[in-house]
Length: 167
Image 1: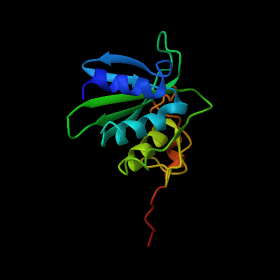
Image 2: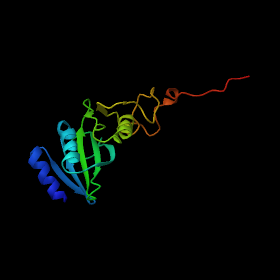
Image 3: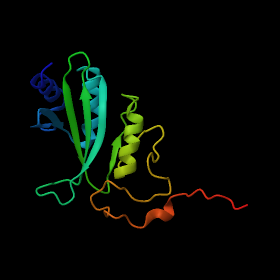
Image 4: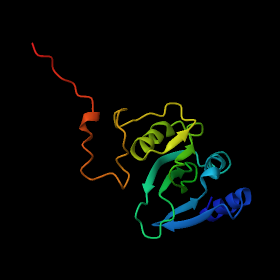
């Protein structure tokens, strides 16, 4: 299925006003509002055969010229049968950094949603075990946000340290 056919089916189902597109370096992207994101992803999987979730990541557009939104969550999909790749992007702003979890659609989303949560602070509602993956639970910041200082905030006190008992 070509990208044009995918776009035609998506627009027929979700309406032309809700979906915008872009292409960058041979990546075809659908940009969808957060409220429609889960339904679109389910449609792409169940109806159009995008059966493999390759990755989920986020982008912080803080201080980007012409950026209208602060964050984007990016889903990279693949149809194993046809080899067609597709990127779905949804935009978020603080304080509403919440999306529906796609773990019900792709079990492999579990850890990558946790990573996005841990690094950017984006919450995935309905996730079976949404907790920090890379940083300790006590950590209060999100290191991949653009407003996180390059040298950190002296957060070493938040990292549990194993000490050797003196004999």
